[in-house]
Image (cartoon, rainbow, N blue to C red; front, side, top):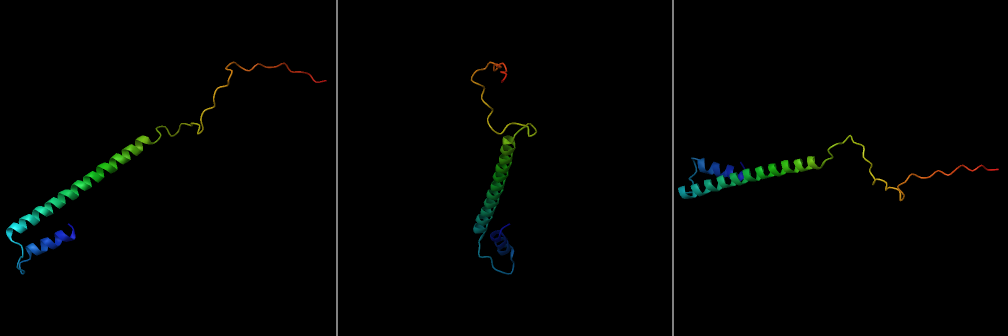
Length: 94
């Protein structure tokens, strides 16, 4: 209950003071308070749904296999000639 609602409740139930609000005004004020409560509850629910959705998306985007060792840089490209390199005979130096 916020300050406005506490003051309104105090003014409406205070028996010593004359209530400046008639029955029609009291009904309108009560319906306004109910509407504010519904709006706050809806905002709280939407905030909770957004928080849960954000956490779900965050967990979904995390790497699925944190133990797997993957290179951080791009993989090396294959050699131009896919055949194995030929070995040249060793030359003896005289």
